[in-house]
Length: 221
Image (cartoon, rainbow, N blue to C red):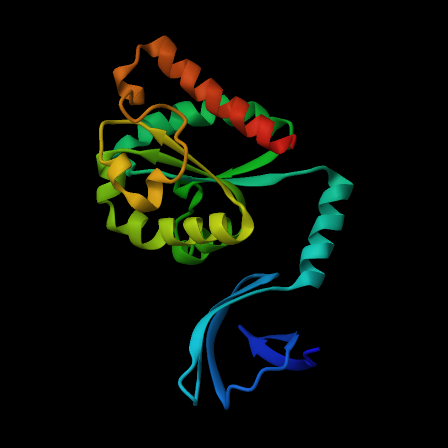
């Protein structure tokens, strides 16, 4: 049986206790950041040449969050990733999920929530770290955005793999979605060969309603 070791570390000015199985790797340097109260992400490197990614969840914080959520009702964060070229379609999505917000079932976040003077990167990282559902409004502009591809998609895909975050792609315009390995693994709301903009106005509204219904089903699991 592996023995456990407990160490105190200070990250972002906060003292935290980490308990893990005792494994000798010489001296270890850790480069990490506290994403929220319960999660630490980063990398580690030892003096004997080993290293890797670091992903730690503070179980005490997670349990506390769960207890608090149980008291006030289940509430999930929805993160919407989109290109600013497609902003008018973002508004239709907001209209269809607004009733879920009014019922207190979800918090919806996209970069229109950023205020002048805020540290935008910190705000985005915080919203992503809490997201239970990620909606991707896919178009050629979306796939061509360096910011989306480099800053938003990696943490979304990591959360999907490690925490089961639900990723819901919506194919807005004709694009190379099926040729993108990191995205085509996710089932899109609509067939890639029938993007939203190829539909009639009524069909488009049916798709946005389908997305809202899919979210409701997920919340009731």
